[in-house]
Image (tube, rainbow, N blue to C red; front, side, top):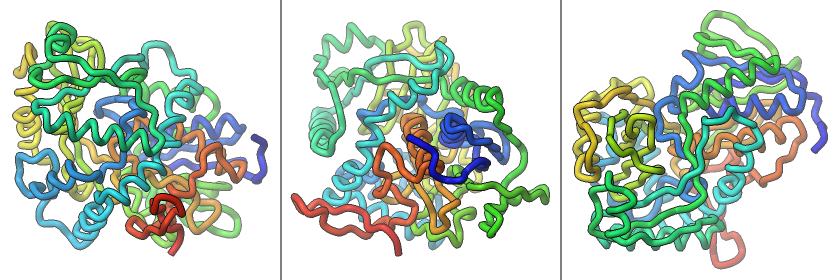
Length: 434
């Protein structure tokens, strides 16, 4: 793919895994990249998440059945999904759009829009030539406490395959589960094994990406929040809280849950809502041999050197809202019945981060109303999984005006709850533009 646009300098706002991946692939085109980060690389949702690269399970968050049931109990503090009170008008609007997209027809349409990006995830990650040991191949075990939960998940797997997702699965009986995964306490129902997935240490991943960008001539400025992105005839002027302003040929806004303020006036109709997640590490004598997922409880576990990382919960709130320390206890109470032989008193590296969620569960990936300003954000729980493929395709779009994957359904200019018929099977697709 050849260069078409006169793009020599690009500013990437945000040094999370998506922003750094975009910067890395921009450098593949010979672009001079400056990354500006408010705190430090990976300070947002990239640092303490589960670290999965699980494209087979990448689905829009607002899904039928399970999510609707969660929303009914969202005001209960013990629910895996909660809404921080008092909600403001923007949060009310987000929840309404979220529920609208959790209906079967919009969800199928959104899944079909996400699947091409997911299918490219592993190839794009491999293209970045990360240092050895940062990522590992593994099967991913999906476990259930009730047969009804397993039946619901298997129905979702069928819909994923219909939507173009690639899943290689097999069933593991309770006896096989007990032998292969003694750490799993939920053994009353057969489990599912999802093959050909990966997991990473998210902290090592972000650090390695940052070092690679800098080693290839890129600049990473930390501790300087960007306050405004202003397109001018000369280029895109990026202003920071320190009073500095610099002009670039193009700018990519990858600011995570803080994206909304920077895209104001650029035609972006689908807003990003902070979905706060929690995680901590536990020691265990026999760590699992791969990632574990308990879909009914929304708990994700990832092997570590000394045990495993437990991650979960979704708390819709403002990014600046006070951290609810009691939610760590909530995650512990939800996860405790699911796991055997872990030291619950050993919890360490407690992390709270704001995942950038959209009401339709699709990332914002593409150009804004100004052809020199682009957005890469709103990946929800799938930022690590989709970072490399998002970065590669957006970098192509910035420099050449096209990408390997059609990014139209992911356009930042779409509306989150406007659909029209796709033409076959009555499946809708997002309407682009106002």
